[in-house]
Image (cartoon, rainbow over all chains, first blue to last red; front, side, top):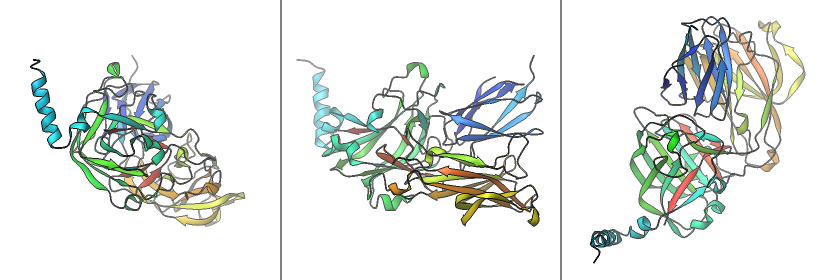
Length: 89
Length: 356
């Protein structure tokens, strides 16, 4: 993983990238209990928030270059973020 | 003669002339909730202007403020959340702080700012700075790990429930979560059946969610429903599930079932579209501030009309309200942006109130 991104509104923050099959740690400062993750071509996933942190393992078959879209769905201004999956060496 | 004392005396005299000397020279802090004084709390939240544009009203019970009755309140402090391992960057926002006596104790507040505090007065308007704060240097209420608002005029607190409102905005928002206390006991829910929304994936089966800690008497239960883009959403409410779910195949929804025995239906308070995530819909259910509702149960299920499916349903959520009355001694009313306000008893920021 590299660097981190703070979105606006600053409800969630994520690393810029995650490796294929890697663990994605998402810091959550909003009141969200679950995060919605959409992986194009693979579907929709949910990640439970515990003590301000959600963890998500990139599913098998999600290859490098894929973008993961994340939303905390907190209305009326959901925080969203994008993480890029990078190939494992 | 100690030459250092001369300018100090002059400064004290000048401050005394404008009536602020006692405030600045002998400033103390009372922490709400009291049990959070020296203990990091398990959750986190953020402040208007720093994390979002909006408004936060805190209604504090007199018991929390007994030690400052008859004193002047001089400012507010919010400490960083230690559980967040990131370094926080400095941030600025424009905020307004209003204070007044509340019309109700914390258990009894509604999602109506004016009803809770009919006549709050302005005690600060101006910039708010959040300092850069690194994890390594963290130490409770010490700088630079505290966001501090010093009132431009003190609030003479004589007693009674107190309402503090913070309204803030900023061109951009920053990562500066503050420590927050939570209720030890929350409500709960279980999912009944599965969603037939076009959004559901093989790994999913769910398009409805609720913040279960918020299932408290006197609080706003908040439900979220995901739908296909462009769909209209509706929430069915009932007291129980159907013994035998009703298939909706006959009305063109072969994979869908009605799980709730509905008594009423309500529209979302907020809906929006996002091309990546579909439709988001939020429903608010105000649970009465009546202990008789403790441990009560109810069921909700979402409907989805139009868009890529003529009719679809979410799974049902069988909900149980917490069995005890909220006990933090403070309630929060949140309004994010121009969104519909909601009452929170289960999650409140740890507040430091500065006084003379």
